[in-house]
Structure formats: C-alpha cells, structure tokens
Length: 313
Length: 211
Image 1 (tube, each protein chain N blue to C red):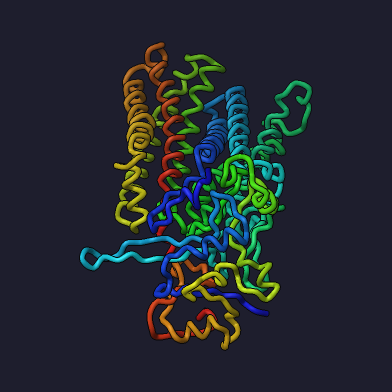
Image 2: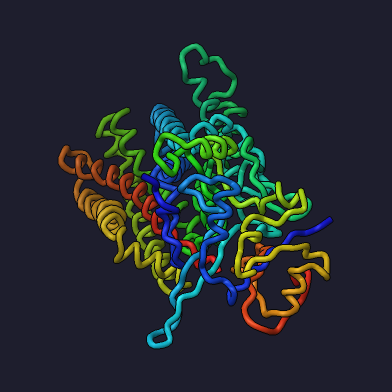
C-alpha cells in the first residue's frame, strides 16, 4: 500500500520547529549548567568560600555533565553522518554552532588540565592551584565558561527565522539560568564531600545567592514572556502555545512550579531556620537544588518546542 | 556568469501540484522530503472567501541564512547563485533547518520508501544519491541547468506560472516578467535577498533582482 504523496499538510500555517528536540535541550542545559558551575566555583574558591577538595569535586562533576551533554548532542547528529563530527569546527566566522563547539571543547580541555594535577600519578605537574600556570588556566576556564553560557542563548537568538528566540534577552535569560543551576549543584557537591556541617558553615553565601538568582530568573522570565506576548504574530503564537497551548503543563508545572516556586519556598523555609544543619531542612534544601536542575532542563526544552517559524511568504 | 532567478506567478498557479510531482519524479526524494511544495491558504470571508495557492521552494538566497548557520560549510553557493548542500561534508546538525526562515531544508535519516521498508527499483536507484543523516533541499535542478534545460518544476507547469532565467540578462524571461508585473520577494525584510520573485498583478518593476 502506497503512502500517498505526503503526510505533511501543504497549508500556509505557523509551523513549530520539531527537529531540535530534547537532546539539544539537554545539551544547552547540561553544558550551560556545567559552565555556570565552574564559573561560580572558581570565584568562590578565589574568595575562600569553598575549599580546594570541594572545588575539584565540583570540577569533576561539571566535566562529567559537560561530556554527557556532548554525548546527547552527538546522538542528535545525523545517523551515519555524525562520524564526520570534526567538520563542526570549520566555519566559526559565520556559524554560532561552530563557535559553540570550539568554546565547549576548549572548556573541557581546560578542565582536564586543571584536574590533572589532582589525579594520582600526575601530581607533579607544574600547574597546580598555587602556581602561575594554574592561575592562567583558571582565568582561561572562567572566560570560556562565561562564553559558553552566553553561547547557549546566542545560538538561538542569532536566527531571525524564529521570532520567539530572536531577542537579546534570550542569552541573558540563559546566562542567568546557568548561574542559578550551577550554584544549585554546589550544595550537592559540598554535602557529598564534607557533609552537612560544611554546608551549614557556608550556607549564608549559598542560600542568599540562590534566593537572589531565583528572583532574577523569575523576573527575566516574566519580562521575556511579556515582551514576546506583545511582539510579532509568530512570537505571540509561541507564547500562546507556552502559556495556554500544548506545552502549558511543562511550562507552568515544570519551569514555574518545580523550577522556581518550589525552590523559592524551600530555600526561604531553610533560611528561616538553621541553613541546613538539621536533617529535615537539609532535605528541603537539597530537594530545592534538584528541582532547579529539573526546571532548567524543562525551560530549555519548552523554549525549543514552542519555536514557531513565521509565514514563509 | 549567469545569476539564476525564478518567478512564481500567483495569479496563474491553479494548485495542480504538477511541479511537486515533477520534482519528485526528477529527483526521487523520499516520502518525508519535499523540495517543492504548493501550500494552500484560505483568504477572505464568506461570501468572498477564496483559496489561494503558493508554490514554495528554496529561494537560493544571495545571503543564505542556512549557509551562515551551517558549522561545517556543507552549504555552498555556486558562482551562478545556486545554493547546494555537499552531502559529504554535512553532519546533520539541522542548523540550516532552524535558521532558514522558509523552512526549506530537510534531513533524511533513511526512513522507509513510499511502499514501506522494501524499496522499489526506482527508489533504490534514486535514494542512492542521498546520504543518510544529511540535509536535503532543492538544488535548482542544476544537472539540467548545466545542460541548458529548465528545472523539472518549470518544465511541468501547465499554467506557465513558474519561470526561470538569468537575472543579469535584461532580456531574459524572468526580467521580462518582472518588468510586466508587480512582484515581491518572500520575507524580504529578513535580508536574505532571495532569487525568487512572486508575481502578483499588472505593473512591473526593476530587473536583475532589484538589489
């Protein structure tokens, strides 16, 4: 039995993009969070807020998260064609994807170099934390982490084909969310490395930082959606699909409920007590950190799914 | 050197889909891929409602958004303005699909043919030219153009709605039509500078693409 000419409707309509799916969303979330984590970790370590083992553990987790994200991206490439993946670096002059591939690769290499002196057998390498070369590597990692956070939004906002993405506010929102998700990984690292007592000791920095970032992200998201709701017809259609259409559940429940309100309430309750020193509040706060990660992924996924092209003519 | 352009006369198109079938027959594209489409649109309200047809294909833009977005350099512009995808270089990032405001490129991942997973001999021969996991789009039938023949869609159009020609030649068929009729280019505000013109009503304009 023949399939007929097509299963694609040949009608003039506002069509949403379907090809950049959850794998790309996970890459944008995972690699962005990993960049946010390394950025904050290097700053907090420099200020003496966290100790060296915690910083190194965070670096390992960030590295693994970045590599897992890259594996998802690799899976998204064309079957068969993906093995020519080294071609992805060829056009950095015009393509944001080529720039992003370069940035994330350099960032992974910098992290490997920073971590090597802590690996048994490589401890004599001359770029430890206290050395000049080590400091240079960390400055490089800081710059490339900042560049990747910006890239995760710029890659989408640079295209004028999809109005909902084509705004300078998108990189700002994604940078802010990378900081939020990166900072929310740190408490998990600290509890695993040093236990809850250490977490309570530096809690005032972490929890107040998380609270501020949650508020900034909520405000940016509000401005973003509000701005798009008054923009062109395709952007308004994207907002409709996000707030009232087929993706409303993932936006309201995942992004707003799990990603913003739940952590806000839990961190607020934890701050009102003893900053995680007792098991009950510790559980609340760690749940808040995990919820921020879920919200961060769903934010990227929802934004990709509601990307609507304008009319082609 | 010629700079190939294309005109679509919206008053003449009757929505017969002859161009769609001709493109399929010429290039043997798989079921999920349509290099040529004729989309329908309802306009107006009862009792003056009408159905209009708009043929869509790659516009072979002067500044193609797909080529700018492609990280591998697989999308190249020939000296005559035809934009082609080099399948040996494409890795299937689908950046071109996101960046093209006309949503023209497709990616073929080796899905079934028109009659299921077992391909008919015609499909076996035609699909051999497509590399699995790479982007596909209209290439202006450059194999025919290079032989001096018109693209398959132009040749098949019974209403003379589709035409092609050299935009640099003031006496070419497309420039003649552009002088005779009002015309516009799709989503011109995006700065892609398409080589395709839609003709709509009497009253001409500039020749050579009006760059």
